[in-house]
Length: 411
Image (cartoon, rainbow, N blue to C red; front, top):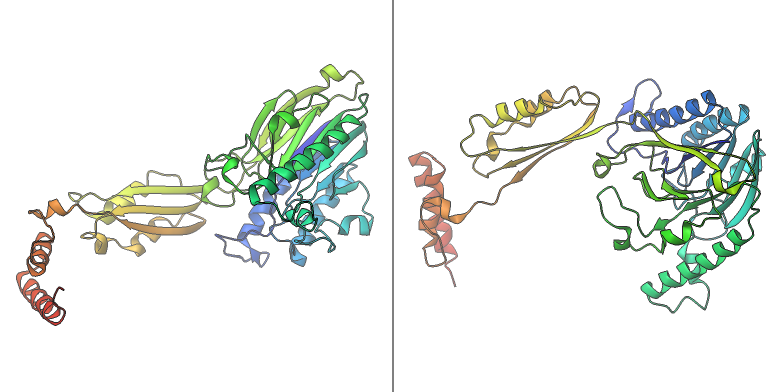
């Protein structure tokens, strides 16, 4: 049984975008759809049995009609090919309060063949063309669902998270205990796990989410644990694999160095539990590249603009979303031309930023040690002379400075 695992598709993210003239939509929407198309094409070409999407199909809980249309198009392609699609609700798919529909509830309403959704903790049997598989679903659990209960609403934030964790572990334990050992089994969840790392290498324990322990999820009764919510692909346990597929596209520069793609799992439908997982691999997609170029302008450099352009030329920026970060002293700040930098970035798909960070200068580099005992006008004169400003301009600035000091004498 061939299974494709993905998550965090986030259709609707449009930062760093421009209008696409062909579709009259956001260029970033087209990026996200192209990456999803790679997954769909791979699934069809390799005759996948099941595509498992572990939450956050959309960026918004209220996706536009265009976003819904484009996603359903791709799910319909899979379904028409006889591929089962299992959709799990994530935090971006679920309303803030119980009652309103999730973004996925349209599928059972339309009764689309071969599509199953999961927006609550339970176990479902999925019948694929190569056999049956049982999937325990743990969608994003809203804290609001617990806050309305008297047992939880008086707890501190830390104890509140702990109480949610204990409840989820208790409920999951019951589902796992009731699994049919003769059938392959997967846990699909949209959740934060204690050993996960974000794209910025920060442990999830620094966040405010409730966390589930990896060692609990890595239950030997499970053949694979498919996770969503963290955008960075990572394997937290090997036997059984506990895996974040990561997102298909980069959302921002925090994910610049992340590999983007989806997971491919081959599971045997044999009743022999010991050797059920045949293979696992990560397949990269051609996600839009992000590129950060960092440059430092030294005092003894010639033309800052020539140095910046030369540094940009060392990098492959073709069709990237690019940003340039320049460290420069205040004395050379005005020499930098944004227009020349933008011209040198013409091959980029989108220029996100040209940021000039002014380096804090040491007072001692002005030729004399400056401290509070030195008169303000003398400090100003030293500052102006160090910057090679013409004598006449210095004289006028000192006159203005002296007038200001006279009008506002130090207390």
